[in-house]
Image (cartoon, rainbow, N blue to C red; front, side, top):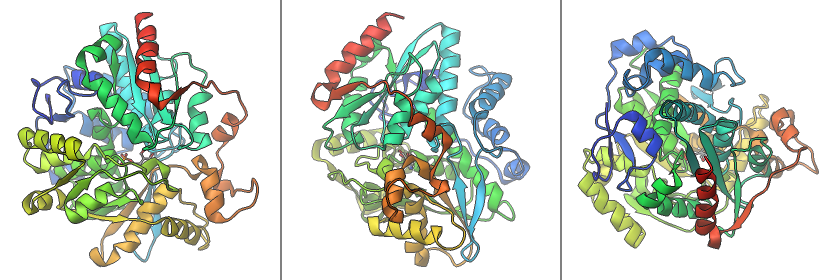
Length: 483
Ligand SMILES: Cc1ncc(COP(=O)(O)O)c(C=O)c1O
């Protein structure tokens, strides 16, 4: 299996090259030359597998034995999920019997968000490839609060990797920041960036500039582990299969997935699973007030709007870059068209798609933009309905989306809502929503790892957005040159 760029400007590369480069050299995103399809019979044989065994079967469709031998792939997967708190890795629990709705808890990894699922594995395989090549890389990433901790934690102590997570000052929770700044690892360098008007999107902009300069990128020896990196979205296809097998009566039944969406990495994982053969009724693309994806799915317009700060801050995204991957595949892998669309978007800040194109990428997707009031109401209702189940604000967006769209869903059929973070990562927001006084918090919004991180010294590195590009080049080059 080889990998090409969505912009069509490079020769196909092998899996290890796609993973280590992160961005394709022509500024496009890596995609496989074709999407492997899994038969119904094959799915029936996999239906009872545990998460890591299922991941092994699915990932080996993309990772040739000559790149990672089967025994090594198994070990890397085992190692990547050994520090998850739940023995199931991803528990899928009944949520609402009346509507046949389930919650897929994706937050039992070491930093309590769904980012741990693909990040642990990605960084372990990067380390594996770099050790084999005797090389070193700096991973540079922007975070809206969860990718950074997951990357920092996964990279901590690795000799082949230095990790530079950037976050917009004051736009992620104190707990998320501390997950990065309290790690005792000399190879992790979190950077708080002040004055980012567009939050994480501002950081993405600087990173795409650095990654777009191939000569500079090679000199700095940097790569991306944002969901730009193909490995992230590929691993994120696995939990759709896993959740599906957990809830269906028989393989072939159709399931709806509700996904709190930001950069659309998780959403694209779902698209990939469906393209591989998973029977999906609908994907619900659940946005908060930052509704770029909802506008694309409902109106056929992809437009950059100003950022709105919300309770579900990790999905406060104005340019969901994995939408390009969806467009690429839904347009029949047409890199010429994709390049023209990307150029138009970066030029004018908006694309109005013709009806045929819009219909092709909208197929099987519903979408909605959830208000702050609805998010708060969903959390309160769920918590106070006797079960005391506490949704984090992102999971609440997914659950609220199902309710808002119920008239567009079939009368029967299972629904899985994705709970992408632990509520303990957002204590201030939870207090506000649950209308609690002082330091009061229910046990469901507390996690011992965060309590511990709240008590120790932080290693802080600050930079103003205006100086970010210069400061990064200087700091990373200095570290890379010393390796
Ligand atoms: C808690 C949480 N939920 C949802 C998302 C959205 O995921 P994606 O960016 O893949 O759409 C994120 C991403 O930052 C997140 O941290």
